[in-house]
Image 1 (cartoon, rainbow, N blue to C red):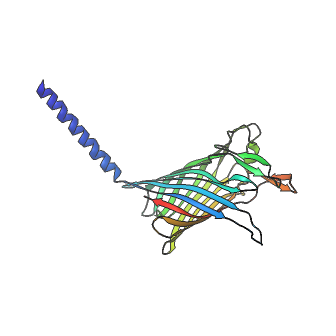
Image 2: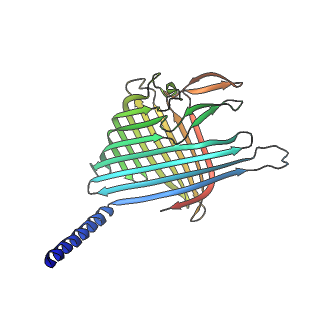
Image 3: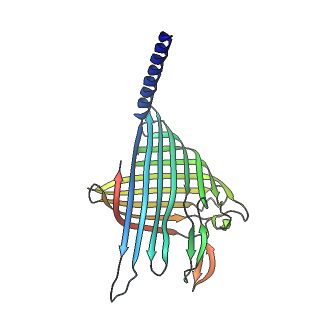
Length: 296
C-alpha cells in the first residue's frame, strides 16, 4: 500500500512539474503590457473681468496589449477602455468620454513583414449618452451596446513592428447593434423596429506610433470601411491621434482627438433650440489633460 501511495505521489509531482513547465513555455511566447491613466482638467475663475465658467473634468483610461508570437504564428490583441465626466455649474455633470474597444489580429507569416490574417474588432460604450439642445434638454442617443459594432474577416497585413502595421480585408462582415428600446435605431442606419444591421465590405486598419522627441510619442489609429451592399463609395472613417508627453515616471500630459464619419449615423441639428433635421456629419472629440499613468 505504501508503495502504491508513493508511486501515486511521485506521479502527481511529475504531472505538476510537467504542467508548470508547459505553462512557463507558453508564457514566454506572450508579451503583455499596459497603461492605466487618470487625467484631470480644471478651470476656475473668481472676479475675472473677462468672464469664464468654472469646470472640472476627470478621465480614466485603460490601454492593454496581449501579443503572442511563436514560429510563423502571431496573435495581437488590444483592449481600450475609457470613461470621463466633466462638471460645470450651469450644466452639472456630463459625460465627455465613453468607449470600449477590443481589437484582435491573428496572423501567419507569409514573408518577413507580410502575413495572412484574420481580424476581429468590437466597439461599444458603457453608459447612456445624450444630445443637448440650446436649453440644456437632453435627448437619449446612445447607451451600452447601443450602438455596438462587430467586424471580422480574412485579410493580409504588413507589419513592420508592433508600432507600425496595416491590415487590409477585402471581404469583411460588420454587424451594428442597438439593443436599448429607448434609443432610435434609425440614428445608426438600422431599419425601424430592428435591433441589428448586417454589412459586407472592405476594411483597412492601420496603426502607427512614433517617438518624435525624448519623452514625447505620437500615436495614430485609422480605420476605413466600405459597405459593398449600400453606397460603397461612401467610406466610413474612424481616425484617432494621441500625443503622450512624459513628465516623469508617473506624471504625463495627454492630448487626443478622434474624428468619425459614418454615412449611416444621423446627427441631430438644432437651430435656436429647435431640432431642424438630422444626417451624417463629421464627429469630433477632443480630450486634453494632465494626470497619473502607471505602466507595466
